Length: 269
Image 1: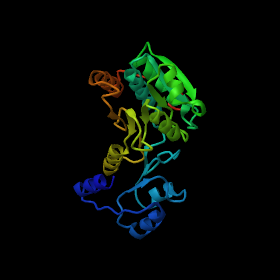
Image 2: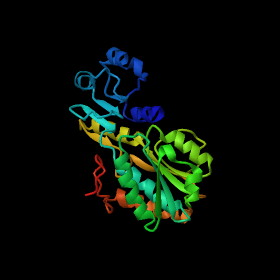
Image 3: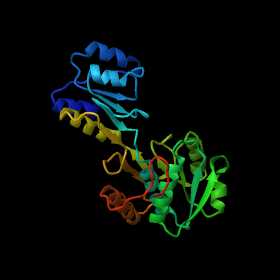
Image 4: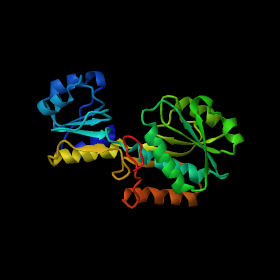
């Protein structure tokens, strides 16, 4: 984000001071008179984010965990991210990528949002390939040979601590992967990717601060551009099918398609 923030600051007559997490409190203390706003990637103020926002400068927290927005404190990404929407796009991709009618899901990776991702994925699979049949495997038992024996060519691994190792093994075995979030390694055999894009949300939060609109939440969501389609491999999803993927994305973005999933519990309503 350094170049984007520098460009935004230049356009608004501001400068940019940069610090690593260890020096965050120091730079706030040294430059507090001149600070117009603070952007922090995580809470690096010893639990004093609300105080810093009140006493020093309006604060934009990126990936702030469960810290809620408040007076002069805005949040970007989390809390409130629509992981059900990310799972939905993954499900659409998996459905469009498969040629055999059988697709795979790896669960039990240790992520706290597994029910949300799974509900979104199942909705996306129904959208992208209503006739596809799903093969599910716990991460401890997931193998390329096991999936391939059941006709599976493409697999979605639910995000979690164990996802990276499972992804490396399945990709090495020749399966296409659909991935949500940053790739743990660049050599994965990824057919499609869903990404969380904080950059545009940060600039929107700063624009709001300039307009003295404090205490806003800018969660990851399709509607605000915080969830985007990443790279899609045409060998896995043909250009014709990619158009269907884009249609699904635009339907959610435009409000024509409501997933009907609780983004906290994953329950369908």
